[in-house]
Image (cartoon, rainbow, N blue to C red; front, top):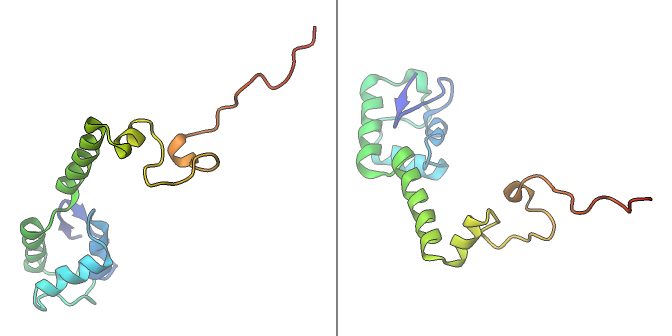
Length: 127
């Protein structure tokens, strides 16, 4: 099993698809990464067929030229924290756990807002 940027890649997948398991690399970025290696790794090869030198090439390229995994996650969190600190609209939405990108909240938005909480007692109390 190949370990790239701290992530174990699935053995039976092609390398161009398996690279998408790394945070910060999608399908297009994986094509760019393999293209930069100048044909050292064919995109059709399976992860289990990679040699140690090819895995080393991938690791060195990703660590030098791309921000992936922990470094990228820290950068995103720092950006969110900056929004919250300066009190901009996006920061306020993050602070209140509401959708940030303009989605409606009168209905829907359940993922971000959590479970429904019923307001009221559910009817009049009889004496």
